[in-house]
Image (cartoon, rainbow, N blue to C red; front, side, top):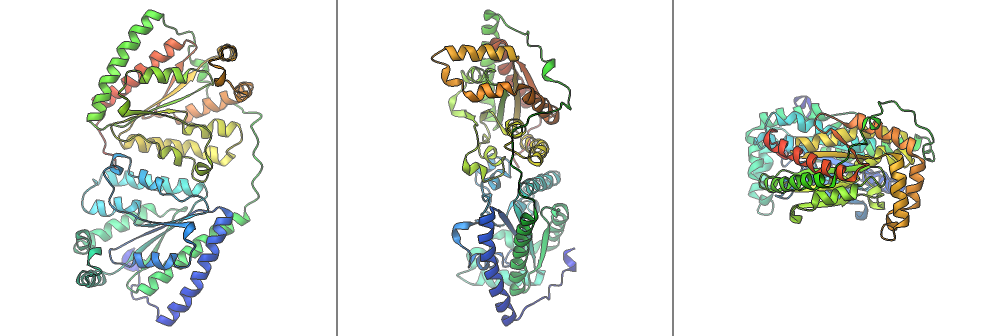
Length: 501
């Protein structure tokens, strides 16, 4: 592939000047249009060392409004970043809708340079490629435009530029030992690049190959590609029908087995047996907390359930004996304006527990296929895509070494009414009961269908759901603590630890 590029392509100075002037004006106009239409753009610049990527970025942003873009020079991950899945730091840097993000190097460094220097194994590379493709497809499906460029230079040109930069006192700092290794391993690095280009050039995010021996030619081709990507994305927005006004669902037909109906809500514990089992499970969990800290294993415990199902009480019993320095509880309510300006998974990526820590999530990304679906906050395409996106997200967590435990706390409609009534009459609990709770109760049949579909479509061998009979609070609390304890113990004892790559 790369050997077919004509690296003799070039532009004379006058042609270059005229083309750049036109491109710069277009970029500024398109930047304003992106802001007005709330279209986000991600530009990825990859290629050989000394191929001119920095100069391309400098030219690209020269005429732009600096308030609407951010340039991300991607360096090796910090010690903190290494404690998360490898895509975590890139989710943090995604631009909001209407803004532009330029990535000078990117997530592809992990399957190029890290692969060359054997910092990732060959067995990991296909997994990383799959995760990258999922990442780019998810943000593209949500409305983000993506432009990716590989700037290619010949072996001779690469060596010449590195020697020139190394001899210049003002440029020598830019030449890393890794850059010389690229030149030394030119054929091998080219093979890795071609593999990456083939595996990750997709419909939502295709690669543009740039002949880089002539710097003027490379700059014009990259800027032309960015202009084309922005223009095409804006035209696509313009041609789309105006969005329909979303409204709450009024009827949902069940398409999956009624898994909730199979939960035995008669299960209960006596007070004495509850105290005995709870204490035993909590002590074991405290011991396991020390082990996950020592072995740097991250844990996520996720709670979903009906209103008044007892999530708060279960979380309290889960955390009662834990060392507070190595766990946190993160409640999720309706997204903020900042969170709405990003992909819906963005806010959950930001809150992932680091290695050695337990993160307890009160509500989660399942809101996309539950409340956002039922109440009309997500359109039909968005919530239907979410099942696949959620499974991909959870697969990435587990591949990175996370222990993931998912609970649905189930109660009967009659039990919920009794608890609502109790809260209504208790001055210390009245704050827990809102008009929205009563409204959601009236929509019980709709939520029941959505819950069954979500559980059926996202319960995987690696990330199964635990359905908790919660009519009896004592039984539910013990089951939660015992299930978390068993999941962590099994992961530590049986599952081979995967690196956070």
